[in-house]
Image (cartoon, rainbow, N blue to C red; front, side):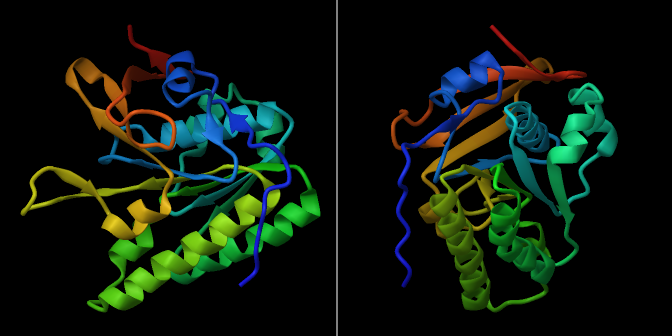
Length: 232
């Protein structure tokens, strides 16, 4: 097995929204895959886009693997129509599990080619795993592990963060909404954030797992035309 070590100190990619950056200790940590999960319409993609815009504004490129059809109108709206974003966002629209795996495999060559990629996003990581018409649980688990292992190796090698979004399902046994992929994805993540809808149109981002932040810490915000607005 190839051993990959980080030769540089860990860096953090801020989102540029004070309440979010404060909650997660300054931003997404390099060499770490961060998972954001929540129900549809809770704000997962908005957060992913804002992290991407922040990265581009710092002079870096972003590899954005899109499984759900991100809105170009929303992207233009929150980036204020910046041409710089379009030039530096490497967008892969994938339509199958095989496409997704190929896109992840290509990331390393793209990073070697461009040299200034600062973030990899997969939105959402579990879309095609969820839609697969198979009852073969071991094969599904192996697929999760293969893709996450390859992604982890890449971001460790290049010392950048990765962000994946995840969908949820209703757990009839334990109750409540749970992220798809269960313990397999949970085990691979060093940083997990839950975004949820609360009263009066607010959203809440809660730390579910982090190496240096206590579980249960949260911050409230609203989704607005220009991105995200912090709630006192």
